[in-house]
Image: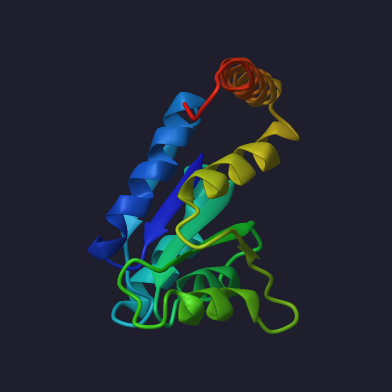
Length: 164
């Protein structure tokens, strides 16, 4: 199971991309909104109990100072994937991106692109696929479907005299 933690309700748009991808892959998840700054004790309790609930990976979605994935990583040895959010950032998301990329040695956080919820879900699924052949098969099917769509678009595009 994957735990999706949002730093605030303003991150729900990114959550929807994550949830959609995980549902497509039939990967179970739980979801919470827990601010690393406003509720550090609640976050610590939630993270430290997660493994007992079957959580294997965290996806942490946060903007601005974006301490959430780092704080989660400081309380667990489970993998943490950070999704930096640019939706309301006065500096285009650079603040949250750097907060996730510049973790101190010993507390790693994987980081996907700004607003990259779908890729965070896929990365989590790839990690699960190391020990779950069903998830691996669903990922392979998804890759094959993507390839078919690109080939179809290429065939259509190459036969037209203009744009789509």
